[in-house]
Image 1: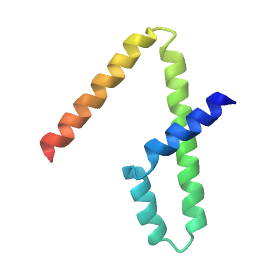
Image 2: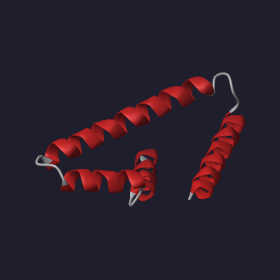
Image 3: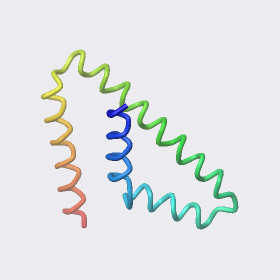
Length: 87
């Protein structure tokens, strides 16, 4: 149960005011059916998370977790530099 609540806390903190949340807010504002927008956003998060879990679960069978963590860190750095450079 501790894992559940820690995950809930960290995901909520990471997603709060994230660009995804800003997109959802703008979609709700322009929507005539905010509940459908909410359900679509929730389903999108569920599918994205399931895909990530599936990929990582299969990747750690062939790539050590430490290597995978470093690769993910490098990808984040590259994306960040690219965004800053395009500014």
